[in-house]
Amino acid sequence: MNLSLKKLSLGLVFCAAWLFAGDFLIVGKTDKESGIYAKGEKITFSIQATEDGKPVSGMKLRYKLTYDGVRSNDGETLLNGQPFTIDAQLDYAGWVYVSCWLKDAEGKNIDIKRGSSNGVGALVAPEELPCAAKEPADFDAFWKAQRALLDKVPVKATREEVPSLNDAFVTYDVKVDCAGIRPVSGYLSIPKGAAPKSCAVVVSYHGAGVRSSYKPYRYGAISFDVNAHGILNGQPGEYYNNLNKGELHDYRTRNSNNRETIYFRDMYLRVMRALDYVKTLPEWDGKRLIVTGGSQGGAQSIVAAALDHDVTMCVAGVPAVSDHTGSIAKPPHKPGWPTFYFARDGMLTPEQEAIAKTVEYYDNVHFAKRIKCDTYISTGFNDTTCAPVGVWLVYHNLPKECQKGLTMTPNGNHGTSPNIAGNTAMADVLSKK
Image (cartoon, rainbow, N blue to C red; front, side, top):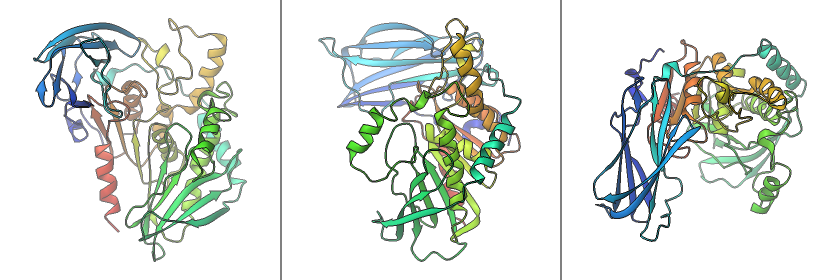
């Protein structure tokens, strides 16, 4: 499905940035609802601060105007009860955003509610955004070899029934044998009394961090929530904290100079094996297989859809592991998480060159080209973790034959950018039999 910028309104979120700090709000917006501008067009960001719904006067607003995530200008203004405006302009395809903080009379920052956005951004000429990624000639051969390695391990699972969060479902703690150092590990829920071939399957993947799987359930569907590391589920917090500080503390960039031992290889083997397993369940209808996740989980969802064409829908929120070459693009921009390398002045050190070569096999810009199913992605223009430039490039590389949608939230950050188009499409599919 080809979408022009005008038609992208299906996925746009036209709303102000609501930032809560006790009784304080900051409302940020762009003068164009979409947050998308042409090269050379003036961009006006409007910021309004309120307390208990009333405009704030006498407080200071500190702000940072940042271009492409790599250069910025700081400023501060005394609020007078009126919206404060900041203008910007780009003569090239790129990204610009403003972040804001309130200060009290003593100059101390006022805490903003966790999970809220703290600014608003814009994309300029997104269809011309620069991409320096170079797909390895043996990209498909490499992943075919990983699939063959996985196929040598039988799909053997153990599952133990555990208390469910909903009496209408049976929930299991599942372990599935996998190639690599750890098994697939997750919680599986199945509607009680589900007949053979009666249910859709939704496999959800986790974002960054070290945690247990969650106990999922969706009416009329089998749900399998897969933790990112193949670790035990349902353990005390100390277990996950120790792993996060110890064995898994550097997993994001571990062995990133070697395509065979980089941490994400085993993670992606588990992504595929989780799909192998759910396809053996007798209750699966054999037709509807949905993958979903946010951030690192969004990346895994894209990989799942690219490497297993039995997947029928991919819902990937603010996908990470995208656009690793941002710092060597012209002009440069912030790469997506986990930022395997950042080139200064566009020049790579010998160590960075080895990393850059490896991570091309793990870039969603390349995986996206291999997806055949309906795919829905989201981004926020104030997301400094998974920059919207990289997310757009992933979306832009989806084949034209795909039914696809992009939810863009001009004021959304990494935690406040909903995948409206994807959630709507998934709900529609799950409502049907």
